[in-house]
Amino acid sequence: MIKIKKIEFMKVLYDDALAQNIFSIANITFTNRNPINGALLYWQQNQSEELYTKEGDYKFFYDLAKAQYFAAVKFPKDCNLTRDERQELAYLLLEERGAIGTYSFVSTKPKKLLHVKAAFESINFPSDFSVADFNNIAVIKKIESHDETLYEELPYDRAFLESYLEWCRLAVQKHPSKLTAYLQYLPFSYVCYSNALLSEQFLIDHLPEVDLEALQYNKPVLARLTMSFKRYLITTLMENKKRIHPDFVDQLDDFIESNAFYSSYDVIYLPEADEIPDMDLQYFEYERGPNKWPGSEHLVKGIPSLVSQQYNSYGDKRLTNAEMDKKLMAYNPQQKQLFMAIAELHWLNKYKNELDWSYICQYNVHLNEQFLTAHIQYVDFDALGLNTDIAVNVEFLSTYLHRFNHQKAVPLIICHLTEQFYLTHKDDIKVDIDLLYKYMDCIDEEEFMRIENYLIDY
Image (cartoon, rainbow, N blue to C red):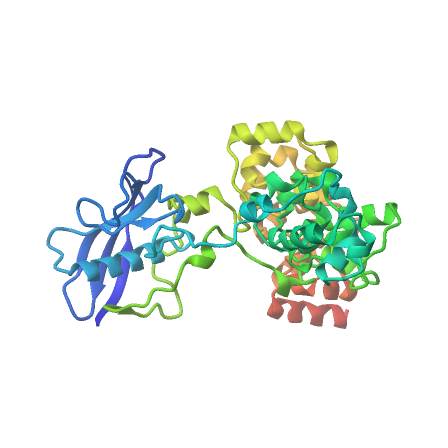
């Protein structure tokens, strides 16, 4: 086995053109052979169905279904590795440098799976079919439990119901982006109830159709909703006198404010991620040790992984500026408000004069001190003080401490308390032992214990 000692990644040279793009240069040192200096990691548009480039570099496809783009590693001419060794080392370099991307040796032909479209087309829909007959929580629960009484209660023959309900059970497991063509046939209540891949962005986009009563049974989705959307969910259910899920009916504040509620159910999704096998190394071995090699995370935004650039971690496609302009114009006021809590910083900056900064400051989960400082004229510090989902440094808090409202407790400050910050500003901020315990999950454990001693003694 060839033992890798160190990999060093050099400056990124990536640009936005669709020609060949070098996005890293790697120097690799080994313990049992000569080093390799100047391996070029690049990506480009695919022009052939061959698995190798003209130079013999193996293609690592970004999209296994389309094989439209690929990454590869070009080794220096004096590299005396065999083709199989070069292929494996190329994989290791791309995996380490592009940890957020998707690379694979597997065939570009997608697996043959039961297709939602084919199953749908095989159903003989009656002329009097209405999806509204299936669009309520009581029917959805019976579909999930295969309740035989459905066949007697619904105004359709058994043959149709058996094929239709089986298609529904198949379809609701798919990524929401694959369901848009079928929403007039697929009960949206069922999607809300059972689809673990729903993102908050998808829910906002389809807010008028979202069944909040059904959604509250979808634990993987609830696990990643922001405080903004959870508060909207609970408020709307209560206003419409709907039954609230017994899991959190007696602890609504914890459900709304805590990120730990159902956290073990969270699901991460990336297109084709479930089809990418682990690489079985045949020629190389390496040891990362307690830390990743230098370069594993630096400049990570420059890596041209089309999967990571085009999709977020829940498989939702990232929009262009023009697409987002169109979407925002179509939003109703409630959708626009909920969007402000999850909008990435790029969009907050782009639409800074059109958005409610009080809502942004209180709920947006992406804010950081650099962005806030650059947009300080827009910041509502009363609202920002209520945001416990963001991480800012104590220098920012100290600089703008006077801007917060200290007539009452400021949760953002309590969540970022350190012993030194507490001792320096204890005469200005409001915190007692009960508040410290309320936000203890946000505070460093050692700092919490030291501050706790001061407050207990006090």
